[in-house]
Image (cartoon, rainbow over all chains, first blue to last red; front, side):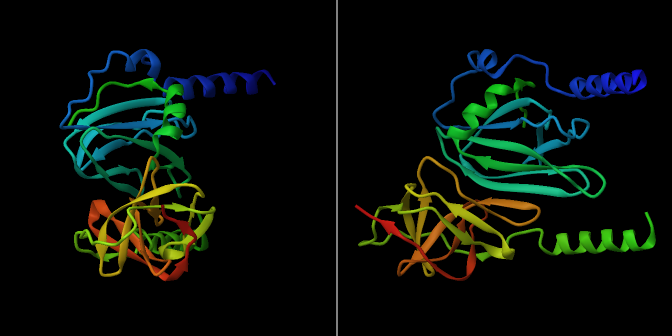
Length: 145
Length: 128
């Protein structure tokens, strides 16, 4: 029993170590620069802890912009246009969407079972759903392009 | 993993790769036409088929704005919500393509393509 407890403590520690530890969305977002009139903003967030060790890079139009950190979020401001988000583990999962000037889009990074490794699947969600869920996450640093 | 297991795994990968993306074909830029309702509202929740045997739910009460027409029908974009179609490994933002009260397919704006419905689907909408 004692041994099982030790294993559980180690397991929980490993999982938590993989989670985002920055300021909460509420704390961080108050310091974000306002969105420029000619740009749109894209938030990426991951609420799931399951598969915490799997944290692939997130690509926006083939450029790495951040990582799928469990319980974490980041954002990037981009010119209006068509965008493709990609996350690759053993499989490549992608999402395409448009971005307009002044628009804010939310991409949830879901964790799904794979053959050998979990898959991170980018999902476009509406602001109503995202604005609640993203509150549970912590800032992992501004996305860069 | 035994030989049987490996074969199943390989078959799964091949099948998944075959269905990795939504069936689609290139589409032109939607053109504004006169006499088309500018906004519509979905009357009731409805499950609609998309390519590859997947389906999506259109929520009742959601509003959609006309953005132009294609030869396949009038294109409507969701207002204050998002709509996507997906296959195993890809998800695309999508707009409805309607003609004669039927969903003909889905316009994928970011890749400027259309994914046709396997057969037109009747849809209940209201327009002001």
